[in-house]
Length: 187
Image 1 (tube, rainbow, N blue to C red):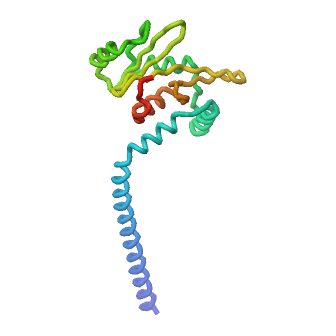
Image 2 (image 1 turned 135 degrees about the vertical axis):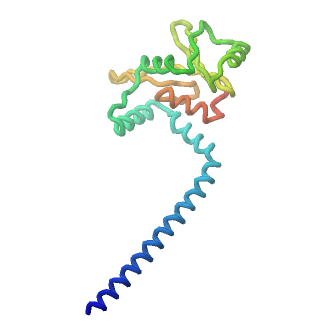
Image 3 (image 1 turned 120 degrees about the vertical axis):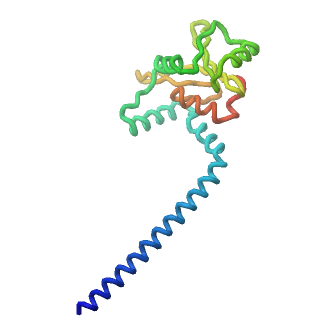
């Protein structure tokens, strides 16, 4: 009786070892297939960046509210930015080069690009007590302003680039601008 139990136990262990090895081999094959897919997807990275730009370029105030509600759900410390918060984030950005009395001319932009060694830079113009901001990129100049919503005593600010798209924060605006070449036209 002991011999039969021992043979059964050995057979069970062998079958378990074979199943485990075949399962590991299948997982290894899946990893190789995943790596090959990743290489293929890397080549289509530009379309992913375009989709990312569309995601951050919100179309209306309701989408902006939904963005903030979703962000607050996933991160309870998320704060809905006010106009002051957005101005502070712009002026404290390392690529912000300063304020100007009026918008620079084309020649002045070329001169600034030659002096500044960043991939892009941001500047502000103040006319008629209104602040306008410009992001100067290798493919063009992008004008944007800060919009304030005062619906139901709820202050919610966003960035607007004049293309009927609004952005919840500066980092979203920068991602969309640097990843989506269509948006880099002079405005």
